[in-house]
Image (tube, rainbow, N blue to C red; front, side, top):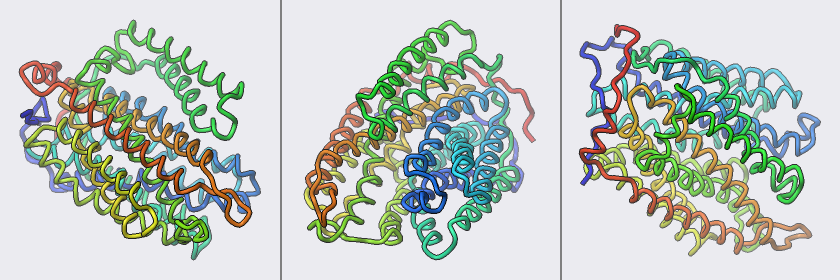
Length: 491
């Protein structure tokens, strides 16, 4: 049994000011906002070509730009938080997210909309920065449940964002949606400024600008190829060139990181079993989780004439996703309890197995709404268990002055998994179609194959979790490998 003392360094004694008692819900609200910002544009995508006068290919960049910006900025802002102050960088990320939403509300120019969505991608760093703040500020007995809640905000926000956006889009001007998210973003920024205090745990040294540029270039090549491969052609010279560029650039970047005194990403630490395996599990879990959102939305909106589709509206579809978000909120303390008793690697393994079980339900029956909702709920339960355990594993395995950057890399791996999942599911559905009313639509067999693929990946994530070393003297030594570097006094 590998019990979980998360924090290697107990907080400095002292009474928190009354407003700081709200830090956990305020940080969780910021995480929910991040997920909401990522999903609210989805109901708009079919209508945006008409509303903006842009091509469907150009409109798709409103999703791609957020994905790319978030992937690049998450590890970069995590490292900046470790060096210059996590609260300071967190406020900056929330400010960029809010500014992007305001810009979306003010314009219909597709170029400005894409740039604004890239600004919103900075919000992806909110969750790893918040988890790092929680480790620094909370006593060990409160950290587990707070980290589990913070990890679950990704699913909670996604479950809330889709129906909210669908309702606004159906009954109001589409710019109203972005004004609403602007107001929520400003509220989140103000609350974080008011309730969250700066952590004194810092990592000394100079910021690795060259490493930042190398990582950014490599990730852009990789994720651009993955996200646009289906549209541009997987064998096209552009896509193959992007993948080749990613291999070369990331190889040179890794060589540079291993020879830098203060690298952006500590690769020696990242490839060790205690950190590298949770990163690998995050990749597989992100893949498995995202397939549920992609497939469920398409399945319930498919025409009734297909024999399996329910023909639901976008609002009804959003409401179908709402229970998943509620489940993630309710199950976050359960996952924290399992981690406290059995250890986070067991929680992660159980999460992967439950994810696979949910997809098995979807394979058996994907034509009745109640079965679809039950299967999606089981998948959400497994996702909650897995996502809450991943940052806990990272916190136990890295020094206190590297938690934001390490969790940033873990979130990056989830993002890459989601991008690959989107491409893989699209490829499966494109190659398994049926003709309905003169149009080609995905067949039920295609959806079932997507479920089988996601379930198999979830089982791989569970197997990887079991390979993570359990806590022992060696594990505790690693967790306490470095003492924090206080650079500021607590209030």
